[in-house]
Amino acid sequence: MKYYYFLLLCLFSIAGNSQSLKKVERSYAFRGVNVVDVQAGSIVANTTVLVRNGKIVEVGRNKQKLPKGTVVLDAQGKFVMPGMYDMHAHFPNVDGEPFPVDDYLFLNLSRGITSLRVMRGAPVVLDWKQKIQNEDVIGPSLFVGSPALVVDEKLQKQDLRTLLEGYQHDGYDFIKYLGGNNQAVYDSINKIAKRIGIKVAGHGPPMGLEAAVNASQSSVEHIEPFIGLYLYDSTRYATAMNTFVEKGLWSCPDLYWYLIYGYQIPKPKLLTSPGIEYVSKDMVARWEKDLYGIDSAALKRKYDSYSLRINAYKKLLSHKEGQGVKLLVSPGDGAFIIPGYSYLEEMKLFAQSGISNANILRACTYNAAQYFGDDNLGKIEANQSADIVLLDANPLLDITNVTKISGVMVRGRWFSKKELDEKLSAIKKKYTN
Image (cartoon, rainbow, N blue to C red):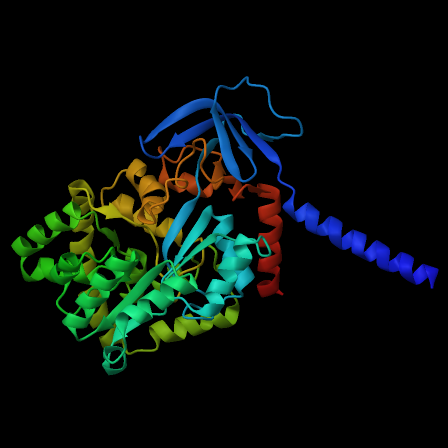
């Protein structure tokens, strides 16, 4: 009996220690590091970035005395930048591709993506958001949209204010508008959302980009609303975009998605996409069947149609950025879009469209944080949340340097390259045996 009580005491002691270990916060110092100032588009050389309790507490001279117990990270000659945001994610097994959730979260994190804007939410996604906040699960922070609103007969019969306030109360970060054919209801959604203090993001409404601008929809997704109005009437498009900028609205084009679904990328290249080794062979086979299970004539029609729109939009993109349109970055979600890995493809498309590396990095970090009205994210400076990517090379010189990752920190928790590689190897092993 004494042994039994002793064993119970040990078990409770272990459980208590485990819980306390989870709450222990370490101090870290990135010494001798070059800070990427995403706002100025410049480098602050040979700096110390001190992190404690999940926050950046000091950025400055390289000789200051460090608090006792600080873990000094090998950062000499390396570059730190804020963690990046994928601003048009779809959560796996909810409305996204059926990746194992832990793998999906880690693949994003391993590529320096420390936040995800989930475009169609559900109670299970809110549960994951809370698990991540509680550190029960390691992954990017989630900003979760409401269940998608489609203006149909059912929605038109509902009390919209009660519905939107309910979503806000449940913890959704914004309202997702998907579509529908009733402009008046769409306008009401935006008016009510503005009154109660929650953003609306999503597709263009029935009357197109001008209606979205008039309603002040916070972010307009994809390229159709923009290219549709531009090809119809470029003068009206220019007027709408001036108002778009004046109102401080946001655009997330998801260009990479259009290249895939518009057959602009040859199939052999898709089959060797970066990161495809972390995807099951069954999923890759389904993607190939879904995309290419059409006859050659239909494929050619789609190719031509998408080619026209994509090439026209790429010319508009740099002009939009030059006008002051606040851009957001995401490759979208779907076939051959691989969590974390396809994000660089979107960045490269921005660069091909004439946007500078500095402005691309700003869109991936600071712009996204500002979208959520959070001044404690998106920069490397004191009082910021410690979402940090350590790189071996300067991303201002070459945007592909964002893949030369030496480590990632999310909310103050550090993952070295060795740890990242070990976990990636374990994911890969599941699909290569």
